[in-house]
Image (cartoon, rainbow, N blue to C red; front, side, top):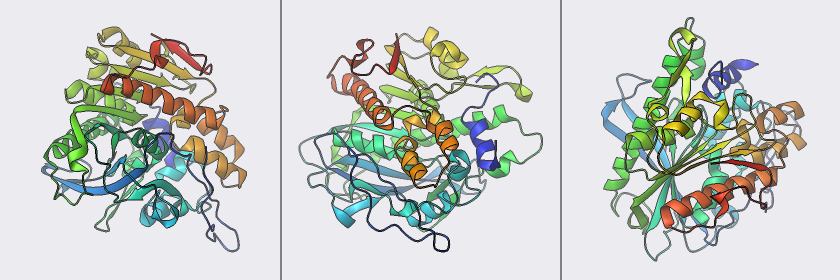
Length: 422
């Protein structure tokens, strides 16, 4: 392991002892000295609708920030939704705001440490999405809502490829940044909140299990607050035309990666407003007191009565529910529909934008081949992206829309790289 960020990843992303493509953006910005920065681009969404996006800053006046006592909890969220006119050229919203992009690519940031790209070698600010900023929502009725939570230490933007694809298929997706957990959060008011994890990880005698449980509880509280605010949105809440009215809050699901996957299922356990959830390689067990033994989350202990999908990777101590005490307990205690798939040749980052962006950076020398394999394995990037999108969309189509393409009935010849268990 190298660097504080990798230490955070090792603990917070795999924390227990048991544990197509559109054209590249235009000019690539100059890097250090005469070295040019690497550029990258996201895969094209596959659904029939153009995508719009907008962001909102929220403050929970009833809750102190657990990481910064004495101030109210402040969150940034983004909406991704069907619109009428596709984005082109400079109309395409940036992948990251400039302040966030600068920090994400800098030495010592959680993002740089977790994924091992060379500091300052990538033009993160130059990456564009396929969405049109502040576009009006597509008329024609309400859309099911899906919340997205990124992994511990990751910003909400790190799942944009999947999020845009869901929006292009007719969902309104709400991405949540968990402030002081995420590598950085750039707020519309100009504040840049960076992760507290590097500082916490440097403290002697840190109780990892307690930190993980606090992190998960904070994320669940964030998610439930966002659900409350969604229910209170009105047309005059500085949202694009038609967006508030397009939210079908009787059909809400959630998907998350790593700690975000844990958050999705734990929030389902705690809040009946979530009707279905997808966990992308997120553990449901933590170290016990003093780092010994295994402590199960309450969702693992109690199980779920509503449908969920587990999507594992071939990371050490990941994969099938048989190999994870938290997943196994959840499986045994759940009465709702559930399935478990594992992507052959994948690693922990394969269900994130790392799978599409990092191979491009490796070809330009911005990340080593060894780090690339460690982050995303040796699965073909296009197949990993297609599989992730297809299984997540199939799940939500089935349980939020009542449309069943039968992909989740069993092993599929369409995706021989996906192991399947029911």
